[in-house]
Length: 193
Image (tube, rainbow, N blue to C red; front, side, top):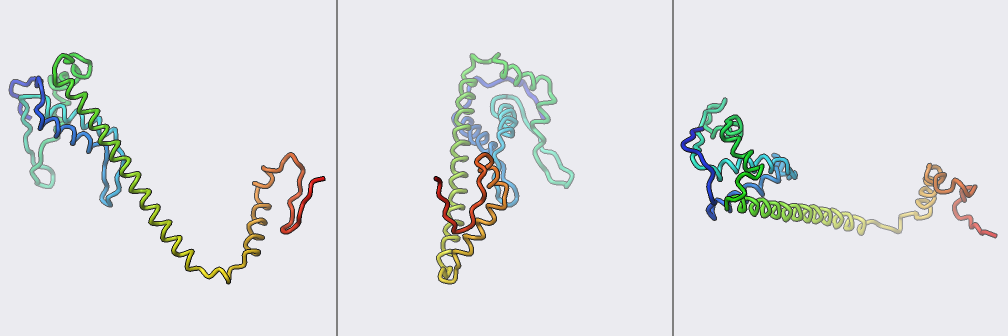
């Protein structure tokens, strides 16, 4: 990392605000190799700090480094800035309200709110997509049930098996502890006098 007369920006450009918002909103979710999406708000908090240094601080240049595999990558930005006391104190001061008079601080509040709204919208989309998957499963089960030949289905023997299973379970005793009932046999009518 190269520092050259670092200072906080007074105001972000529209492009910076859009990029910051999109990057922050995307950090609310992680996707694994199989495409499963997980809600990760804790990563959004880390991402906010990283984006703060990338978009809100002038005079910083991050260097490329060679990783263990020999590939050229950008240095670990968060690690670099968090280990630098001067840069770390910029974020601490922002977090403690020392720069509340800067227009950028109002922009950061708007960015955070917009990113949160975008994350909530995406959560609703994910929930809706899961409901669609459930609907597909239920449609498949309905189709399978519709193909069954009910004429070969002995309803009485199935009903008797269900009643026997219930009566032999602890559910019967829990529901009839105090009324000293005895379990009815299947088909027997019970009348109260």
